[in-house]
Length: 264
Image 1 (cartoon, rainbow, N blue to C red):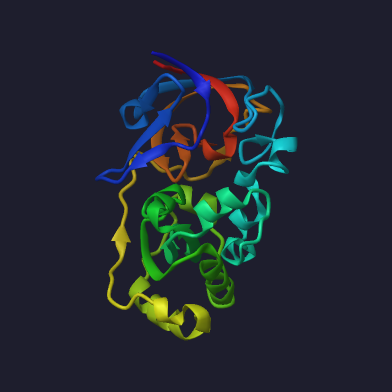
Image 2: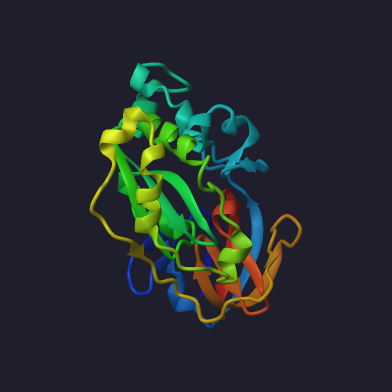
């Protein structure tokens, strides 16, 4: 079977195990069905997710000019505390920013390689946790806009990490922690503006990834350096494909790359 199209982050359905889908313009591929089979990935060209042109991808699936122009790559995306739509203040496109920022957001704790704090739109739970490869997660606060979530995350970063070690996550080098205990421990550090949004009575969400074999070491596939790769798919975790030879491929990190995929 041959598939061709521009890479975007895999779509997911939470289940036991999680289901992963590569979605192209005119086709889709259930990646779970490719487990144990040989995959060939061939880089064909670039296709910016904004302008659609064959220009080198700079960041987040966008060419350099689009990255600095599209509202989908504003600074507030990576740094929610910079959100200004609640002040009726535009960054790049106020209508888009209001749509994205002025909706319920969750500040959460997730455990993928270690316990970390993060922010996501409520509509992206549990998708965000799946994308990070977290095997367990819990909501801390639910606030009405992105700014409040951002300042809460900033405050909590003084007490818990906001980073994930993707290598440890992919090797399944993990340790279970009591996220309810951590949530309660962090409550006193929530900013006053968000304190009333603390979630008192909820439990952990546990996630089950489709992995047949975890690698002992990981080596990352970079399509710029290796435009053609063949390997046996052994697992999917976060947004990574895990192969038998310990190669791992970050699909989300390769957004905007137009590829051919063959399944043997």
